[in-house]
Image (cartoon, rainbow, N blue to C red; front, side, top):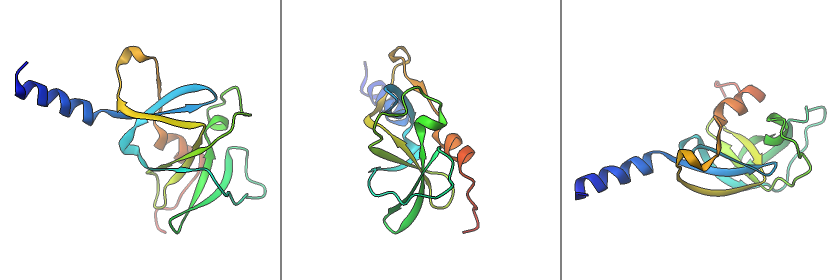
Length: 134
C-alpha cells in the first residue's frame, strides 16, 4: 500500500467516526459530529408534569439543557438500568441531553459489528420542541 493510499484510508476512518453507547444493555452508535459533548448525569432538576421521556434539566456550563431518557424514547425493554451519562446533542440553540447507560468508545465501525445506528438529533428534536429564536 502506498503512503497516499494509507493516508486516504486514515482520512476515511476519521471522517466516519461513530460514538458507541449503551441503552438498556444494547449497543448503539451515532455520528460523532452530532454530539457536542458527553457529561456525567448528575443533579437533575425535575419538571413536574413532564412525560416519562423527559428526565429533567441539567446545567452544562451555564446553559440549561433538557435531558431525555433514551430508553423511554426508544421503548427499550429494561428501563430500570441506571443512566449515568448524557450526550449533549447538537439540536437547537442549547442542545438537548440524551441520557444513556454509558459511553463505550469513539471509532470507525465495520458493518459486521452489529450496532444499531441512530440519528440522535432526530430522536431529541422529536421529543423536545426547541425555539431557535432564543
